[in-house]
Length: 283
Image (cartoon, rainbow, N blue to C red; front, side, top):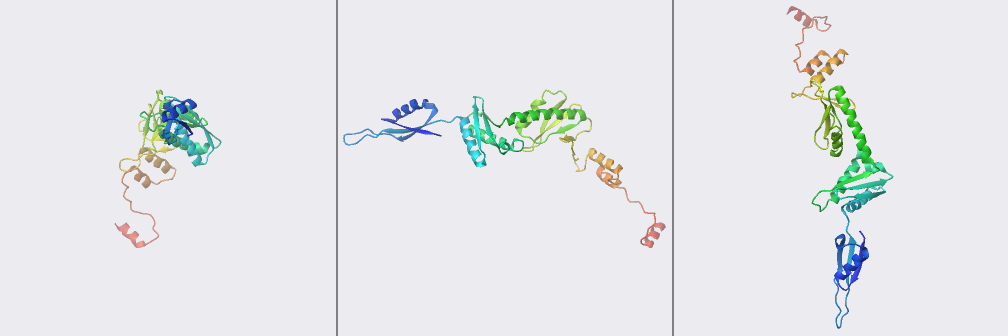
């Protein structure tokens, strides 16, 4: 913040001189009085009044100044472009090291946006939205999420089962919800708690018993019943593996929750203690 010093016979005169020189109004500047000034007397010399004037920063300019300091701490060379309206503030960051400021799926950029928004809204009664973007990343990410939403909605309808997305930020979840809001074949709900809250796409043609959800990538999400056992879908997996020799009958019984049958006496040839075999034969 650049300060300019002005002097006059009085403080008011010094301030008016400064406003005229800077081309600003009193509401647009910060005034700091350096010297009140004194009138000269018969045996004393007068002292002029001195003031320092500086232009007030807007909410957006205050946020930009904060980001510039953060860039220095991160060791990143970047410049900013500020676009400020009554409704919101948009700050575009230009740098050669995009990933350092964007991070994995925008994590760093989101953090900078939260902090810049907090700084810009200091002293405000109504919150003003601040958007921090880097090389048009926000728009590109939004288009990617829209395509993903449409693709997973088609998958949910095709399979007749729920499809769960990975955890997302509130901003990204709003994009998914808005994209599928007019889709008459599916509905979307948010589940879980922050920061692991995610969206589930539910098709209207949900198949009976298909309560598990398909994770992105096709991996099923297994649920457990109230007693801690696997649900029906998990039991089906045991049965399928049993046919291939992966699990024996006892494993399948444990998976289904049914008690294991009592082991039957062995009547084959025993090569160990012959006395035990004779006792079994006699019984």
